[in-house]
Amino acid sequence: MLYKQNLHTHNHYCDGSGTLEEFVLQAMEFGLDTLGFSCHSYQYFSPVHTISEEDTVKYKAEIAELKKKYEGKIRLLAGLEVDMLSRPDVSGLDYTIGSSHWMKLGDDFVEFDKKIEIFQEILDKYFDGDIWKFLEKYYGELSKLSSHGKFDIVGHFDLVTRHCESEHPFFDRNDKRHLDLAFEAVHTIVKDIRIFEVNVGCFAYGTRNTPYPMPAIIKEIKNAGGAVIITNDAHDPTKLIGGLDRGVEIIKTCGFDEVMIMTDHGFDGMKI
Image (cartoon, rainbow, N blue to C red; front, side):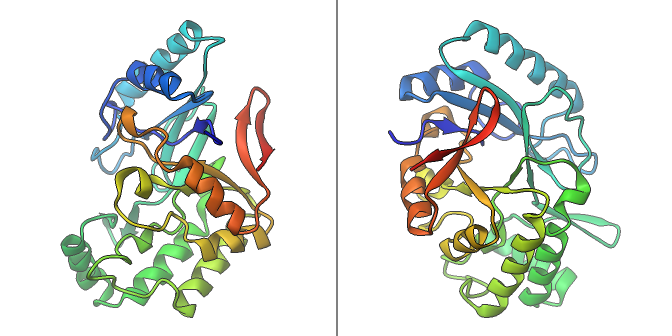
């Protein structure tokens, strides 16, 4: 195994399955040297799929206990995946992943990372059925990520391409209009947040053939002076290493000769 870390994982505290210790034991069995916990953070506007404020306290305390219990065997890190519209307590964490699953449209908070039928309803209700209005809104808002908090990693940057390999793709992700919007957002975000995740969960779960972000955007991250880290958004301990090495090969073909890893001194580059 080339890549022995995974910092994007979800457990029973949010929308994943498996306890924290089950993740630790499986990570060691797989040969990982570093495991990061990154529950969906508490968000005041919706409890869906997220950890509660009360459980966030328990979550941090449990990770601290596990760090002591498995010290010298595996590096364990406390993190959260923070939706940019939420305002959770991020004290005591080792890192955060900043991402966007929601939009504020008028007085409504709308989760757009949904199945095709529901996404179509959102598109019709709020964007007059115009996918380009939606994409402009998404990338425009995502460009402001750093104004919503201090984030270490940009999560699944082009999540809006979710359906692009389905029978109802909504748009061609290689369309210049899409790439222009995405590239502009990359160049804005990278000024404040240098590390973008290459999320290979699709390979672990067999959901599509292209990671987030797509290779064209990974290349633009390189052009913009950004860095990448490999994750797979595991929601189950048994999926912890799915696609990680494939992710390394993808970023190499996109021009990267190093990948970011977490060390005892923070994030650092590892030659590949």
